[in-house]
Image (cartoon, rainbow, N blue to C red):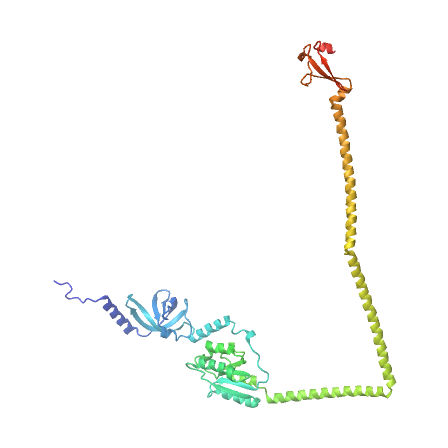
Length: 452
């Protein structure tokens, strides 16, 4: 009997496929919130990560096509809200979420991308005040990069015509929102720097949502603004709107109209300024003419009596001559004192003086050495006399001089015992002066009694 006759037997692959179908059919679009961990983006460009909370976790994958559309960069530990479909990875038998969209939990994706890019460019120093360029005081030509149909260009033109119509405005039309708008704006900034001679650039648009203004938050726009050799004013949206372009620009204007006011001086203000300068110039000319008239009057009075004028000039010449003589005397005195000091210094450093000093020193040393040698010789002479006296006291010759004699045997050895002699032995007797040969006739020994 076949025990499997009434049973449906599935392969692992078939069972996994059925489970995947059930999951994908019932969980086709789900929103899940959790914390990202174990994020990995290999060379394929797909992102693999785990979404977890305090009680569970689930594997997730976001394929390359969806990942590149994100405006922020996910990182480990970030709280996310993701949208996707639940499926099964057959090779491992694991269920997972295929993520199609994600945004930071509690913070919009665009806002997160804005903060990430701002922090990155700020670390690079792209927003440093030292890199900002000053605006020209009276620009002759203003470049405007904006939409040709938007309200911004109309506001700018109206303000410039009203305030100072002589300023030329060059419009570079671009898209200011939507796909590819950021690239157009960056290219326009580069082109205006290369091809068009303008004194200042206004980059901006009218108000809108964060998504509408996003082209001005792209990195390529910020870098184009920063490398511009022409000063750039960022005029994006309303006063409350803030973009990355505002931080990178040389100056931020709250609105396009405010930007136009910054680059265009009021004609009325200029007329008032010209009137003020003209008045000051008139006063200066009048004061100059008055001063010259006074000098001419003085010269005219002096010319009535040339002798007086010549007397004054002669007196001035005498005064200058006296001062010159005094200055020459002082200069000569200073040079003479300097010469004397130099002469004394040279004499002090003269080789002859040094040789004389050396000779005197050698003579002194020689005299001291000679006295020392004499003293040493005298000391040695005295010591030698004392030693000689002591030697004479101890010398046998001194004893012989007092009448004693020295007996020697035939070998020349001193005899000090009569027992060593026999009658008939020949001995030598040493006297104080000379010696004598003797023959022993008899010997006798001295005893203590005999010595007494």
